[in-house]
Structures are given as structure tokens and as C-alpha cells.
Amino acid sequence: MALNNHLECMTGNAYSKAKFDKAVLAVGSTENHGGHLPFGTDTLVSYEIAKEVASRIKGLLVLPALPYGMSEHYSSFPIAISLKSETLIEVLKDILTSLWKHSIRRVIIVNGHDGNIAPIEIATREFKVSHPEIKIAVLEAWWVTAGKLLPKGTFEVWDGLGHAGEGETSIMLALKPELVDMEQARGVVPTLPEEVSLKWTFDELTPYAATGDPTKATREKGKKMKEVLVNYLVNFIRKMDEADWKYGFKKV
View 1 (cartoon, rainbow, N blue to C red):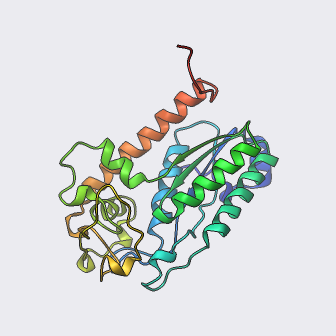
View 2 (tube, helix red, strand yellow; view 1 turned 90 degrees about the horizontal axis):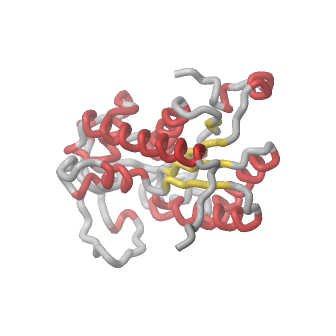
């Protein structure tokens, strides 16, 4: 893949010659993903999705991934490197401010970690209010979106959900198979209510630092997940570009 739209690989001269009108930021985490997946799984997956999308969208700048998130609820398993929610909110605002200063008015965030959802929501909402001209789109939970986009029956256990579970392990097998050790894959499906969100710490849900059933993961499932997610985001951005990122209500 060409690297000429990746900011971390680009010289100043290369950037000045290119024309970017939007940027994509992958936000991940550094935390235990059981014995079979690397600590950087959330960052790696969101960044690979961002890069693939940018390879198909003109004018989309890939920012270096943010490898730390709000992981306090995973800190019962070593080693979780966590930012406070307040810190992550301010970091995201600072990134958006930096992009704003350089005339980037369209930003896509690909989130890879559940603990980041609330801080991303607060940061982007508050920045949007103070900078109404900016357009911000967020893929909050790719693991949920992939399950909705794929046919029913794609996954065998818990709709593919889980931290280092069937879905996440599958997409890592498709993206970074050399970092997956399936011989160490173990998980458990926790008993949780469907309509009420319990605020847990991870050791209350699993003794393995993994939930769901990673033993059901396959590379083929992961390839399908990647394909539907990338296609979904590419089509979304193209439609937004065609509409000049204008949206809102219609007269009735």
C-alpha cells in the first residue's frame, strides 16, 4: 500500500504538495487481550481499518494512531496503560484543534475500544459546539457494526462479541495473524442483562482477560468483517463528499 497519505511517513514537502481536505484518526488502547492477542489489538485493528479506507478515498489523511485509551476498567489484568477520561477528552480536543489550525474541517474517528466511547462523545460534541463549521464522524464500536452488517449466523457464540472474543480474534487473524497464538485462546461468556448496562471491572466477568469464545475465530470471518467495515466507511465518506458534508432536516 502506498504510504503517501500517512502523516507519520510523510515529509513536510510531500504534505505541502498533497491536497487533504479530511483526516482519519484511529483511537485504540494498550491492555491485556488474553493469552492469544497482543496488548495493542484495539489500536492495530482501528488503524488498519483507517489505512484501508484512506487508500480508497481521495484527500483523506491518515493520522498516527492514538495507542492509549481509557482502560481503567481493564486494569485488574496486567498491564493496562490507561488515560483518565478527562485526559483523553483533552487529548482529542487538542488533536482536533491542531487539525483545525491547518484547515482540516472534516474528521473521521475509528474507535477500537469500549472505554473510549464516552470520552470521544464528549470531546467531539464539545468541539463541534465551539467550532460549528467542522464535520466529525465517528465509528464508535466497529465490533458491533460488523455484527450488524454481516449475515446472521456468521458468528457461533455471543454474536461474535467479547473482548478478545470470536469477532476480535477473527479480525486479528485476518489483519495480523503473526501476532495471534490460537493455542492460548480461552474465554467465557459473562451473564449480563440485555437492557441495563452494568458498570463492571473486567475481573468480574472473566478469569482469562478475554470474554466471548475466541476458539471459534477464523481468518475467513475476520476477512468478512474487514471487508464490510471498510466498504461501509468508504461508501459513507463518498456520499458525504458528494453532498459537500451537508446534512440536516428536510422540509415536511
